[in-house]
Image (tube, rainbow, N blue to C red; front, top):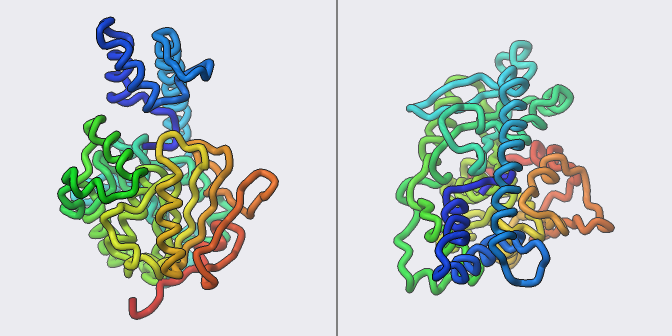
Length: 351
């Protein structure tokens, strides 16, 4: 899952099968269409080999161009303010407050930024995503000076050992949208039981010893795989975070929503997301609304898997466009600007 077009190994396999031997052709084309409905160019509900081939070529070309653009942005601009570091073998970037030298004793907020699948690796470059450029703008840094921590992982953003054994019987008890997601992940051979969130938590503790961090204003955000990681982070340690902004993510169906009911959350999701179903965010919003939770949810009409493009520059609803924020309860802060909202949040004491 990521915020750009990705030619995954699973897609290569699926397309190779779809274009393969005649005896399997119809079945494989059907599977490809189910997973990537946008490949059906003429919208007739059937996928031809020509459509599959054109889809493959288009995605490959788009990925190459977008990869180069994203990497160029990261390589030329962002590292200037994002120091390259490592922690226990994990690469990460650190952007310090712009006025840190003038206020060495000041306690600053900290943002934990979790990349999506497009940031996976160990180069300590791809983990810098477009919203890191937004946070690095000088005017924003002066208005909201803070630390921004951008770790990099190869695995999903989970705490090792936190995912239970997912038997067929247990999966059958989950909402249908989650059943489909889990089935798709299994088909793609995606791991779900190990990740680097535990190490990230240790990193946050280490940074709090190295710098003066306002522990009541530690935030977490991310998109797609990073959006799921944001939900996982507050689910694992809700007392650690003052607020969260997950985009195109979902709260695991085996976790207890009561644990995160007091965490201020502003979630965003594209209504037409073909990668991470919008139902995943709708489900957790329904849960937290039933609990009187502190969650805002902005569903972006017509937006696909690029909710992050809108979320991290959001300054207010646009009903005509279909960008409308819902509130789980009366205690939600209705500040319209996403960054003003975030930096206004403070951790509840005693939690």
